[in-house]
Length: 374
Ligand SMILES: Nc1ncnc2c1ncn2[C@@H]1O[C@H](COP(=O)(O)OP(=O)(O)OP(=O)(O)O)[C@@H](O)[C@H]1O
Ligand SMILES: [Mg+2]
Ligand SMILES: [Zn+2]
Image 1: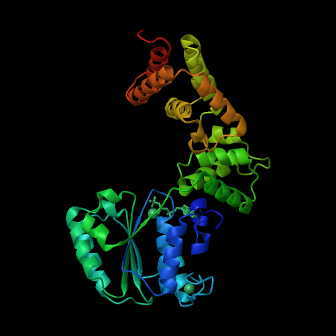
Image 2 (image 1 turned 90 degrees about the vertical axis):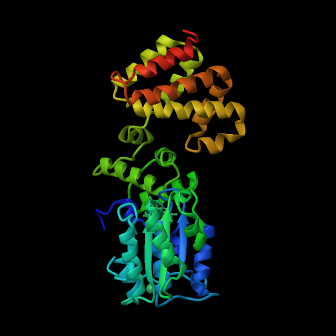
Image 3 (image 1 turned 60 degrees about the vertical axis):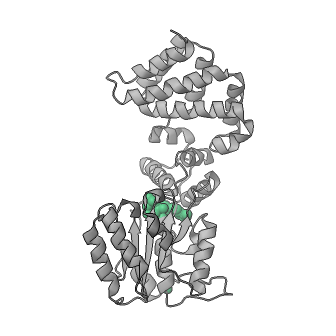
């Protein structure tokens, strides 16, 4: 277990370990406990929020030999100890198939799947097919799959997972019982990271975990991968991991830098802003990362100007102090200047990809912001 990446090591093995997605977990558990299993499920939602995880738990639950019925509060949970659960957990079941539709997108693969689904399961009660990235199937393949879903063998269950439901043919979508997964909240991610750090016996500041959580985009897997990078970098050291260290390891631009830079813009100090930018680039700050971060920072300023109440949702990763700074900055920044800055830096971020002098578009954006009509 020791060298497993964190997100695999901490993949939930039962419904109760899944974070969030409560509406989905409850419905699936009830379905298993009440023998109301559907033959086709569609798990939609953003990446890294539990689709594959829940597909595997469901596959175990429908096949578990020790499944409890209501009113037991463990009703519907797989036991993770019987032969069926173990077979699936160890990835050696012939009746549990995970198909990546990104690399098996054609009609032949779907025909093969259809043939395979016809045969009775070898050891499990149900054959479970998980089709990941289902939106990547070609049109012909989708139609072949549709046929299977229209008359599924009674021993087969299909779980389609996708991050882009809108790209799937509607006839498939309407054949499936659909579950919409949600991004995890900042506090859910924070709690998981804290829990993992404790289990891994690693000391890390809460502020450091906040930095990671706010850079995960609501995907727990991404948060866990970032945590992994930080732990690996820090391996063998005894002292507590700080927020500052995390920013350095992950190449995240320090919020103090963004705030100082935004101050210079709002005071229209073009030359100081250019010098400040270059000084930080020389110290190793990544220009692309800076462009991305300053955009998100300027966006926060603008939204805060319009609706101060949005602060919590906008920047949940900030400390109280940083929150106050951002609030003050929003008050002191002229709306026209802020929108002009945002537009200029959006252009800059695009142009940087092709620029020979990578910071030049940023410098021009500074000038456009501070010296309009220049
Ligand atoms: N809701 C959740 N509860 C607990 N852990 C989660 C949850 N979502 C994601 N994780 C963690 O992230 C890892 C990846 O999750 P999973 O594979 O289920 O994501 P996914 O939704 O299938 O993503 P993708 O669309 O990229 O395939 C899991 O192994 C687990 O560690
Ligand atoms: Mg997945
Ligand atoms: Zn079991």
